[in-house]
Length: 121
Image 1 (cartoon, rainbow, N blue to C red):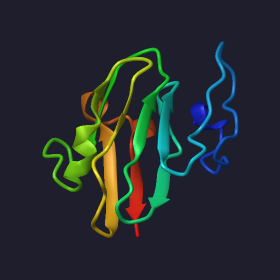
Image 2: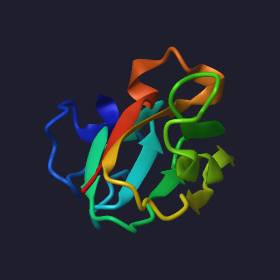
Image 3: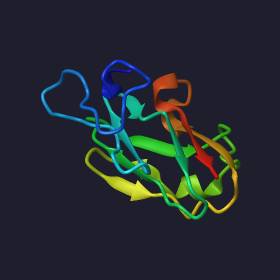
Image 4: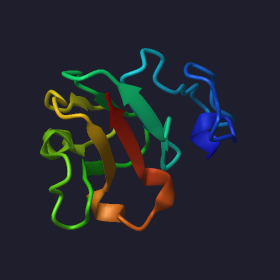
């Protein structure tokens, strides 16, 4: 959990630990930041119709998709994020159904720190 300052309960906008560049969790309640091979925060709660943004501040690429792996069918709106090179960001589609959506890095689907969820209310 280094990208969240060492705690899964880090407040949005709190700086992350170590590293040569300063990274933060999303501060607007609808942004996930990927850094140090970790998604931060790991869970967001958003309103119906919201789009979430994934920002890749990691040194490597990530391929963010909906659960389950490899079908990616739980929340197809998340599949619009897809492949992100270092420094790139992309939004999901509009999340219009109340539910909880899991996501993961398709290319590293077993890495727990690259998994998370969105609660849509």
